[in-house]
Image (cartoon, rainbow, N blue to C red):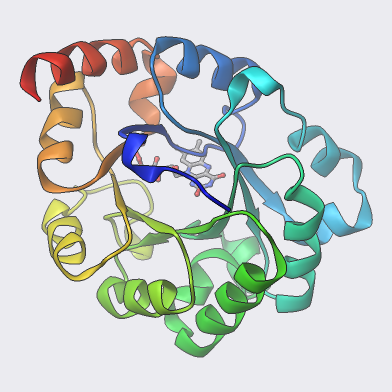
Length: 234
Ligand SMILES: Cc1cc2nc3c(=O)[nH]c(=O)nc-3n(C[C@H](O)[C@H](O)[C@H](O)COP(=O)(O)O)c2cc1C
């Protein structure tokens, strides 16, 4: 259960279609302190679906790694988390993806409007596994949801500071990250629009860790540059 989040500063964001073993190793090589699997459907894990098994592949050199699951059914999420806990250093729950097909099954960002369900899923997964459980959310009702997630026993929260309706457009509102960081006792990973190494340093001034997505796909060395700047700045 012990996981030292204080060492986690630069984080590679989970990205479907990108964050496979090869890319995760590259990001770790350049200095990412934590990497994520892409989101994996909890039903598919439980059924032993081939694509889920593929997405669950990992190597020791990637550690620490968070394996991310999604779903709308608590018992299935618990089963999937238990199947991943041997491999993963962290079990992460996706509550941020805006994809219509996921929302239709009550998963991912559909959960952001359902505080009771958030509590139920997080509490159930936390009590079922012996690994830290984290949750990745979006801006929608973020203060309320973050407090529920913390009370339910999560070890950290990642906030992609954009509303579900905005998809990946518009600008992430870092003020929301600032506000949540002030209220929460657990670590807050800030995400959204870190485009260059300097932005990661700005993120680290307001919260515990900086999560980088699209910029790392274009230029994985962003982690190296951010590490170098961190060594100068902190
Ligand atoms: C192609 C793509 C796939 C993504 N897949 C996931 C995913 O599987 N799980 C997740 O939590 N977020 C996913 N995201 C969201 C990213 O993790 C991140 O929150 C978002 O891109 C904002 O960060 P950025 O501005 O640094 O890219 C995805 C984003 C993109 C662009």
